[in-house]
Length: 266
Length: 275
Image (tube, rainbow over all chains, first blue to last red; front, side):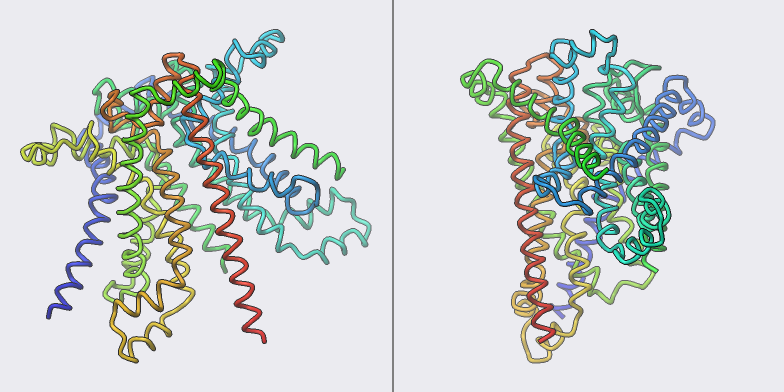
C-alpha cells in the first residue's frame, strides 16, 4: 500500500513538474493570444512595426543559414578529411559559439566593430559599417549558429565509404565532380538537419542582436527584440501576438526537423 | 586545393572566433590589472555573481534530480500509455525551440503581479516575477532538456534485463538503482549536469525579461554585462565577459574529456565482447 502511494506521489510530481515548467507557460502565451480575438490579433500582428520585425527576422535568418551552409560544410569537410597541425584545437573550438553566453558574444562583436576599434576605423576608411545595421544582425546570427551544420555533417563524412570516393577518381571523375556526385548526396541529410537547427536558432536569437543591431524600428528591429520592447513598455498584446507567430514558426521547424530525422533513421 | 581549403578553414576560425575573443581580453585589461580587478570586485558585480551562483545551484539540483527520475519513468514506466511517450518526448524538446525572450515572457504571463497565480503567491508574500523565483523558473525551463536528453538514450540502450535480474534476486528498488542502473548512467548524468550548469550561468534573454534587471537585487552576471555594455562601461563589461568566456572554455574542455572517456570505455567494452 505504501509502495503504491509512493509510486503515485512520484508520478504526480513528475507530471506536475512538466506541466508547471513547460506546458502551462507555453499554453499561457497561446491562451493570451486567442483571448485577443481573431481580428484584434490580426491587427496587432499586421501592425507596420511588428510585421516588419517578423519579415526582417525571417529574411535575415534565411541569409545567415545560407552562409552557414557554405562555411559549415567546408569546415566539416576539412576537419574530417584532412590532417593538419592544430586540427584538434579547431575541432574543440567549433562548439565555443554555442557555449558562450549570448551577452558575452554581443559585447565581443560590439568591441570589434565599434568605430573606435582599429577594425572599425579600417572598415570606416573604406566606407563600410558593420555595426547597428542589418549586416551586424547577420554577423550575430552566423556566429551563434556556427556549430550546427558542422556537427551535423561531420559524422556523415566520417561514415562515408572511402572506396566509393576512390572508385570515382579511378573512373576519371574530377575532384569537383566526385564531390557533387558522391560526397554531397551522402552529407545532404546532415546539411538539411543542421540548417533547420541553425535557422530556428537564428530566428530565436536575442542577446547578440540586442547589443549590436541598434534596434532601430523598421530597420534593424528583429522579432525577439520587438517582443522585449513591448514587454518593457507593458504592451502585453503586442508582445503576445508576435510571440505566438514566432513560437508557431519555431515549433513548425522543430516538427520538420523531427520528421527528417525519423526518415533518416530508416 | 587541399592547402587552400585548410587555409580557408583556419581563416574562418580566426575571423569568426579567435580574433573577436582577443578583443574581450584587450577590453578587460584596457586599464591594466587594477582596472580588471576593480571591475570584478565592484559591489554590483559581487552581488550579480552571488545571484548567478544561487540560480546555478538551485536549477542544477532540481533539473539533475528530477531529470534522472523523469528519464527513468519515461523509459521504464509501463504506466504510460503508448501514445503518451512520444508526446512527452516532444514536450521535452520544446524549450530548445523557444526564443529565450518568450521563455521569460511566458512566466510573466502566468505568474505576473496581475494574474491569478501571481496574486495567489503574493498573498503569501512571495513574488515570482521580478524576483529570484521567476528567474529560477525561467532558467529551469531553458535547461530542462539537457539531463533528460543525455540519460534517456543510455537507459534505452542498456535495456531492462540486468535490472530485472537484480530485482528477481531480491535486491530492493533502491539497491537495484544504486548498484545496477546508476553505474551505467553516471557519466551521462555528469555530462548533462555540466551542460545545465554552463547554460544556467550563461542564460541571458529569459532572465533579463523576468528579472527586470534591478541592480543589486535581481541582476545576474550576464545581465550586468549587458547593462555595462549599454552604459559604455568597457572595462566592466569585458572583465565579466572574460570570466564567463573562460568558464565556457573550461566547460568545453570538461565535456571533451568526458566524451573521450566514454569512447574509451565503449571501445574497451566492445573488445571484451569480441574476445
